[in-house]
Amino acid sequence: MAVNVPRLVSAMYLRVVGFVFCFAAQAFGQGAGSDYPMRRVADMFRPVSRPAEMIQMTAILVLIISAFIFIVVTGLLVYIVMKFRRPENDDGTEPAQIYGSTNIELAWTVIPILITVVLVLVTSRTIGEIQNAKMPEDALKVRVVGHQWWWEVHYPDLGIITANEVHVPMGDRDPAKSKVTHLTLQSADVIHSFWVPQLAGKTDLIPNKDNELWIEPYEVGVYFGNCAEYCGTQHANMLLRVIVHTPEEFQKWADQQKAATAPLQTPEETEGHRLFFANSCVNCHKISDTVSQGVFGPDLTKLMTRQTIGAGVAPLNKETLWSWVRNPQVLKPGSYMPDMKLTDKEVDAVVAYLQTLK
Ligand code: CUA
Image 1 (cartoon, rainbow, N blue to C red):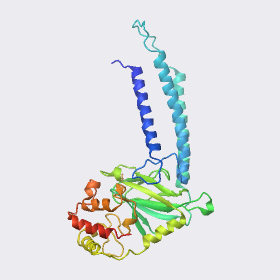
Image 2 (image 1 turned 45 degrees about the vertical axis):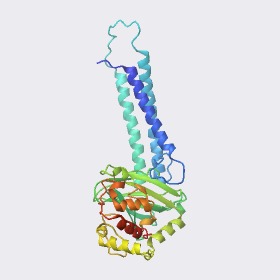
Image 3 (image 1 turned 45 degrees about the horizontal axis):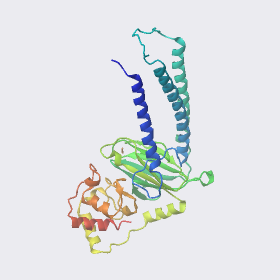
Image 4 (image 1 turned 135 degrees about the vertical axis):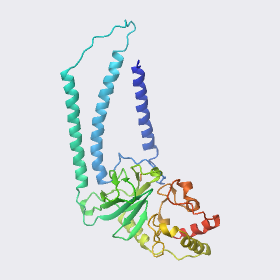
């Protein structure tokens, strides 16, 4: 079969250029602004936490080596395609056939082996430095449990449970003021993967195994992450955000999470409370200091303090909450929360009650 090599090469180039263009548009197009959109491609070239900075150095070295190989190989390819293309006056005879060259074969075996050895050594060193880092005594301990398709977040020392967002205090490059967050990663069902590119590398959440990860962000802000291991229907909507506060703001957040919720005020809120406890909501959700102690779904004690609903599927507000309670399958098809078949009026009441959880 005849292969049109110049056409093949130009098609390949178009594809590469297209990919680079799409990537750049995604990475830089959505970067600006302080109103946190629901999804944002995190700029992995702008790390703001120690482990991510260590990984970046290795990544840049790998990129430089790969770019060099790419340029040499495609450069040679293009040169050969142009120089040895079929001439106008081709008489159809076969050119001289040359077999074997010890020098060339040695070169293309030994050089790649050397490059691979360098990459293996550099990568192992970075992984080792991150994994063997000694955790300071005062590190904030957080336990993250992956579920299909949301994140359960515990602060065992603070007695706080939340979901889909990890609040942490800002660290400092000065070791005296350092504030590390030490995460233990677990899974309630299948394998998930915790990935917040600007803060640390990917680490899997594996059933019956505790994995460790640590971060020390140097800038206040919201850092976007997602599940990075295919885990079922709504894997793409298993989003998470790490919210970095100044130490004072973090303390304020923690105090709010532990404070008692305000008593119910309106008859609608009271009716919603009655409906919530009369239905099977209590089997799956936990609300502190009530009989609702389910653990299958997210803890709702301080639901309204969160930024999103359904693990980042929509911003959390009255409208999205209403839609979710009416039928979660609309916002997140496949979600394990069933349609509770409440009437519109009942949904109004339940939403009024849920809105008091703050
Ligand atoms: Cu969890 Cu993908």
